[in-house]
Image (cartoon, rainbow, N blue to C red; front, side, top):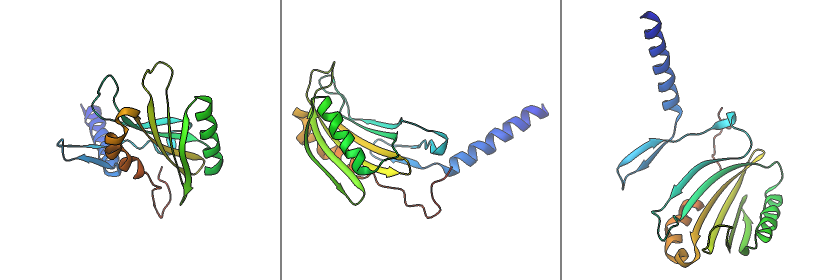
Length: 168
């Protein structure tokens, strides 16, 4: 019994500690909040940290993906790589810019296995030896209406200004 009580107290204290360090995401229109998972320095390499979806229409849900990508090069190097990858995928780059340490680009194209043409909007920032990439993906025929919803969210990606530096 004593070991169980110690285990429960240890779990509870750890849970409170994690909860105090978490960032809460609020969704007032749908009526809920949830703590966000920040993988921190414990996660290395490339990984997707968040996906947000609009309700599907005609078999595709327009979406935003947030990815962490190991990339020790400069933002200009990343822009060059991205342009090359779009060319390899037969996508058309519509515009591209680096301004205030933020890389953004817009492109259209099709992915293998997806029959519809997609419109992409990307925003990337550097964080140490990584690039944090937010991408909105919308079918081209819905771009004009759904970009009003998704692009402001992608454009909200910015470096976290913590005077103490990144946390563990």
